[in-house]
Length: 236
Image (cartoon, rainbow, N blue to C red; front, side, top):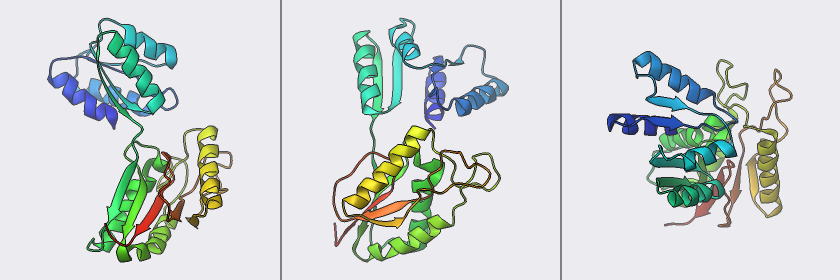
C-alpha cells in the first residue's frame, strides 16, 4: 500500500525513488517494481534496496537522497526522523497509528458489519490501516455477536491458497505477542467473543496462524496491536 502512495507522487514530480521494503516480507514490493518495469518506467526511476538497520542508515546518510517517507513503529520512526533531519533531509514519519471506528445507531447494519470484518481481519490485521478498535454506540453493541459470527466464516489458510481470507502473521514472535495480548485482555476482565488461539489449517500445521479473534471490553485501556477491541458506550 505505501509504495502505491509514494511512487506516483515521486515520479510525477520528476524524482526517482528508492523503496526499502521490510526484510521480512519484500515480495509485494518486488512485484510492484516488476510491474513498473513492464509498464515502461525507465531504468533507475524506481529502485528497490533490501536489508535491515545498516541499509536504513545508508539511506539516511546518502547525500543523494533528499527526502524520506516512513510508515511504521514509533521507535524506528523517531530514529529515522532524528538521523535523517540531522543530515538535512526532509523526513515524513507516520508512526504508531491505532485505527478506531465509531459505529452509530443510524448506521446500515449489514454494510457496517461487512466493512468492519474486512477492515479488521484483512491481511491478518497486519497493515497500518487495519481496524483494531471499535466504539459501539448505543444499541449497536448488540451487533457484536453477529460480527463474531461473520468473522467465523472467514477461511484461514496459506496466503496463496485459493479462497483464503485470513493468512498467517509475519513471524513466530508476532504470533506469540498476539496470543499474549488476548490472554492479557482476558485476565483484565475482557469478554473474549472469538478466540483465535490454537487454530491452524491442516495443510500448514507449523505456520504462524492466529485465527480471527476479538474481545469486548468496557475499559479504555488500548494497545497498538492486531487484536480487534470493542468498547461500548451509551452515546457519543
